[in-house]
Image (cartoon, rainbow, N blue to C red):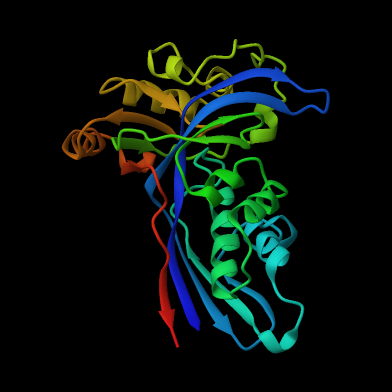
Amino acid sequence: MIKSLRCLSPAKLNLFLHITGRRADGRHNLQTVFQLLHWGDEMTFDRQNTPGCTLKADFEGVPPEDNLILRAASLLMPQDPSMGGVCISIKKNIPMGGGLGGGSSNAATTLLALNQLLELGHSTETLAALGLELGADVPVFVYGRSSWGEGTGEILTPMTLPENWFVILRPPCHVSTADIFNAPELTRNTPAITMSAAFTGGVHNDLQAVVEMRYPEVRNALKLLSKSAPAMMTGSGACVFAQVDTQAKAQAIAAKVPEALGPVVARGVNQRPQFIAEHY
């Protein structure tokens, strides 16, 4: 029997993000490429005799009912008290409101870990469907593959991307995804493209201009990073990134960035890292 699971809850980058329309329900259709990173939050799941889920983490300003880890756990925790429960610990590296998918990744990692730890036997497809109830980005982390995304981001086609290196800057601000998507000045009519066209140039992030107008910290980070390599914002921000082909180049760029911007050097991966299990 598995006693404990340790794993990386990976961050993601949107290598571009086009808003192709708005639905009648107010949600947006988009096209994007999700690039998984070999960097993120560190999570540990331990069996406990006490029923339910215990979370050892400080999510300042996030009430329990909004915490995606607890919401994900509630979907899978057994109702039989004799089965005990799970204690979840997390070391946060992914900033909240950064566009790196931290909350979605944590939720997906929780679904995958509890399914394995408690031997529930759910299929990946079932877990992805549960994850979609929590957020549009959760399924990509459940499947654990860098992917082409359409719809609201939940229609996924796995992709094999070059495992390049990225420099990521984390401006000290929290961007509200809902506010940016509801901004009246947001462009919502970018023409749809094919997967092959996405890698011939001309892609962008439709949310970036809106965020730059509202958050000077993001605009300044983009200007700084663009001096060394082409830079773009990920998701709805606030984090920005540049892609290079070697670790040495990435480290050289990061070394020139003020510590206040929280520079990170991370390698892109096509598949999320495996869980590390400890058995009784």
